[in-house]
Length: 510
Image (tube, rainbow, N blue to C red; front, side, top):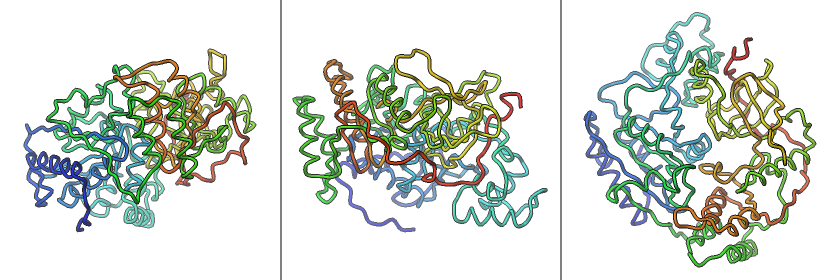
């Protein structure tokens, strides 16, 4: 493969050259396409920052392609073959499933940080199939699997390079070939981390321990992780380890959403003036819309972004009422947000199993219906590479003016969920949707509160993060109103997969 010509901006070219220089010092020459074994004591760290539209993702994708062409192997959360001393590897990571899926839609084989920190323990017989599929072994003879099943696995892998997908095509379940999970014991090689503004200190330390060569890509204008005093992990790095990209201006790609995001950097801009800017943008471009009410149909797949929890709960309640959802059950198609895993320490392997399948805190999920066992739910994990699963679930529906949530489904232990028709802007970081609704009255409340974060008015950081979640269309909602849905909730829009994997079996004693 020969890389297509591409013109970088000056700061992109400088960042590319800095990364290339760093890699060259570690034995990976992407210009000459030459590799040498990794020196055990070699370490390097670099942060590339820039606001939306500065070309971070394009630069990351270009570097990934150059590394792949040089012979560096991509390590994903799928399957890792035998370790070789001379092998050089790259992992492209994101903090959430949705952030990883955004990269995958752009041709970058990304996975979550958690999925790399923990590695699966495979059944030895079925691992022989994986080794055969990846070219590391001969075609095996496996008891219980026919030649036709192996042929299906092989045909699947030729079109989609996914070992779990190929094994599923042969009729195997996840619990057949993955016997458990363990924390990775040996370091990897090169790590690229997107959405690094979301990293907390613990994750950062884990990554530095795991990757001798680490490149962070992050947006300094986003919201810092909670309890980090408004600072991001790359803020503490010395200047020599940081590069900043600036917006790439291309007239043919003029984007009113990015124009609005960058306008927020003006220290003289007040909230009222920003709303006038949005109104002017909406008058001349259909990609920006000012709406007097929230669109209930969009909430099913693209949550309304809010600042206050009270607003989030009221909008969720209104959404469920508008769709005629019963008080004691969920409708198929209702959106959920994973709120963590509620398991005791003795079930650590079950926790790793759930998290590795995408049920990490903040994951966006669509409810498909009840599982076969009491307390289990069939779920579609947005952004996961194998999205359909069945898991022991604790679903909590918060109600306005009520301290305790209503719980329509509750296993004794398992994955906990909140409703996802509306989410806070903090939780939305790392995600993108084609169309995003931003609840303006909450941002106005933040502006009136006069709060700041890292020297900038909080409402501006909130507005920046919220509007840059929109890929193609921004809806600025101005009133506490909800439009009636045009149709019932459903799941037909979700990608159909093989039979869903069942997770946490046995947690309820069955």
